Amino acid sequence: MFSHVMLGVTDMQASRDFYDATFAALGHDAGVMDDKGRCIYRTKYGVFLLTLPIDGDSATAGNGSTIGFAAKDAAAADAWHAAGVANGGTACEDPPGMRGGPNGLYLAYLRDPAGNKICALHRPG
Image 1 (tube, rainbow, N blue to C red):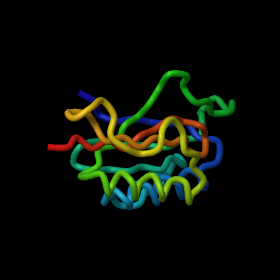
Image 2 (image 1 turned 90 degrees about the vertical axis):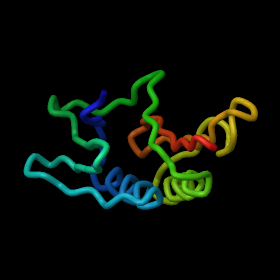
Image 3 (image 1 turned 180 degrees about the horizontal axis):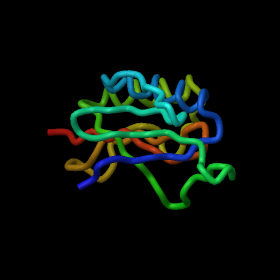
C-alpha cells in the first residue's frame, strides 16, 4: 500500500543519528544522504526518508500520528527502544511490552528528536 514515509525534522544530524541507531537494532542499514539533503533508508519493503521542511518553517510532529516499524521479536523491539533512548529519543506511553491480552502485540513507543511518535511492533506467534 505505501511506497514511502517522509518525516520532517528540525535537526538532521540528531535525527539521522537516532534513526541509524534504532534501525540498526532492527537489522537495517544506516541512512544515505541525497543531493537534496534528505536522509534515505531503503529496504525491500519500502523507503523511509527524513527531510528539513522545504517551506523553511520548523518541523512539527503530527498530533495523533504514529509510524510503526516491524520487529522480528520482542528482543529486537527492546533493543530498538534502548537505542532510541540512548540516541536522543524519549520514551512515551507504557514501557515496552505486550498489549491486548494473550493474542496481542508486543509494542515499544518513542518520540524521535523532532517529537514524532514512532513504535516498534512484534506480532508473536
